[in-house]
Image (cartoon, rainbow over all chains, first blue to last red; front, side, top):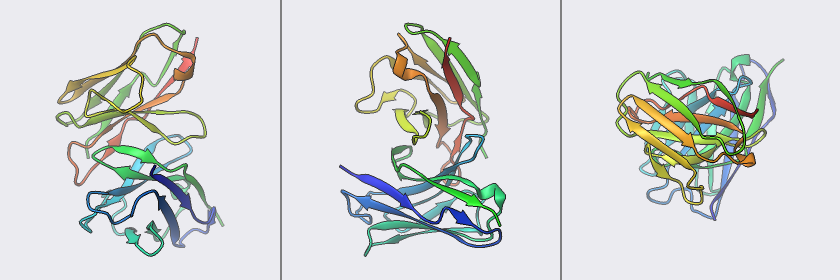
Length: 117
Length: 109
């Protein structure tokens, strides 16, 4: 079955760029009809959709993050990549990748990110 | 942005009880409302999609209803494994937006 696994640095300094990867197993990441998303959860347990990348190649981003966030697909590694620039402490939390079908029906386990100097 | 107001924020109940959680959207989201369960240290799990459709493998004691701006999620005959936090999520105006409610923590009385 399809599984997702997030990975990345646990600690990032303020103003730096956060880079995360989500490895997809059990499916080819750029298969037609497969869409992917990144979401995050802060320490207060609020869930936030960050953005989605569709099999058509189009990306959609939370307006609150537009300009800082970019998502891409790495077909060689079968991964979905997240890059977010100019991070602050408010970007700390658990980051999840998920399959996007109007809802999120498959999630990775999540990876904790702390933004601190 | 569509705001999702979820209530109550916390709820105490006993095994065998029936519990209901409500989500109110600030704009019409049609039937694009979904419910998740999250246990400590775990990712959210989809329970109900498009207001009332049970995700594969989810017990039938979970149900959802509503449309437009008012939605409810009900657990009948509460089981010990149901104590968790529940979130609603709308996708009615995607793109651009997808938003979640702030969650309901269901605790054992």
